[in-house]
Image 1 (cartoon, rainbow, N blue to C red):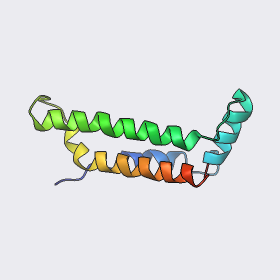
Image 2: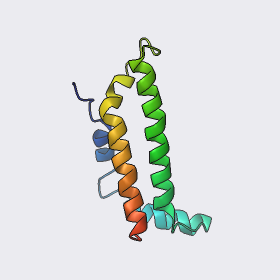
Image 3: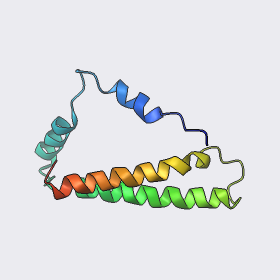
Image 4: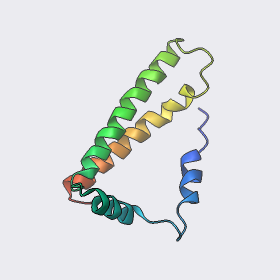
Length: 100
């Protein structure tokens, strides 16, 4: 099966330069400005990724069943859904290990 173009990687390159803050700096800044407890941020990230995987799986299934004619995005979900699930599992593992 044809692979989807990697737009995520391209978009990350735009903000990967030294002039942009890293993940830890963004989290620290958010916590200092809002006063929010960010100790469980990875858990919420895992939840969001898992929910995205579920939503995309539903969209992909509807596309496979012919319920989304003309959809040009759903065909890429064959690989996208497992990638989202792996990312969710990684975020949850980081949370369980206490990683920010």
